[in-house]
Amino acid sequence: MPTRHADVAAVSAWISDATMAPSMHNAQPWRFRYAPAMNVLDLRMDTTRSMPRADPSDRGMHISCGAALFNLRVAAAHAGWSARVRLLPDPADPALAATVVFTEYDGTDPLSMLYPAIVRRHSSREPFTDESVPDALLEGLSGAARSESASMTVLNDWQLDAVLDVVEEARQDESLSPGVRDEIAGWTGAGAKDSAGIPGYAFGPKRRDGRAPVRDFAAGRPDPGRESAVFEQSPCLTVLGTSADRPQDWLLAGQALERVLLQATLDGLSTSLNSQAVESAELRWLLRDPHAPAASAFPQMLLRLGYGPRVPRTPRRAVSDVLDIERQTPP
Image (tube, rainbow, N blue to C red; front, side, top):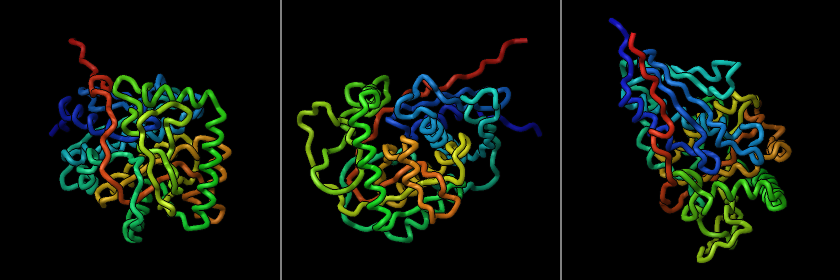
């Protein structure tokens, strides 16, 4: 029997789910191209959405595309299909992040259990409560990261102090860099455009007190009417890391990140990402724990976990804007 190919309508639905992934400043730096005759989907990095100041190596872009790739895998699994993935398949084409071939799956893929969380997951910049995240949930999230060839380290008290110092240094460096501030302004608030970027309603309140590392996207710009709030004094922070620091590892980190976020959402947790401290190569080095296992040698993202209010979703580009269908030419 010939292998059945995934039809365009199904793939379009999976791409819609893929685009719900988080991305740096919600830039959504991905494009897809599906060839129905070959049953092959290409995931490309959209370099027109790069951030040369904050992300000069495109590490963040790789992580974003990895997160979208994971959502795609989950959506396909939910529909009864398996996604066979090749990362960076063409050395001569580094913008080609992955190729995916779909095959029907006989059975239940465990990934499908994460599907309900795709539309429920939102990054929160709101204060969380003082309720502790149970150790059992944190262990489960660490296991989710490991299953995607990454690691998640929960910071203890002395590690928390050190990491918060790095975050503060990153904030000060950003405040002294007009180029970085201009780049951020181009993707946030009034600069948010074409169903991308972070609109003002998603900034969250200004931090009046507390130590939670929440990036203030309105810093240095007028923001009338925005409220202030007290954030956590002892936030639950984790560092997502990989054993190496190549483009392939960044794609793996993105998939691990999204798996952790989806599982956390199913666990009833609110989540917040902080890339500020990992955008500088020098500060990323300071986040490394010399006593940590090799699997977490290279920090890729700082995560904040806890219990907070529901927050609205940020906009997403239409599937028609990010998906091209390869049309067959008549013989």
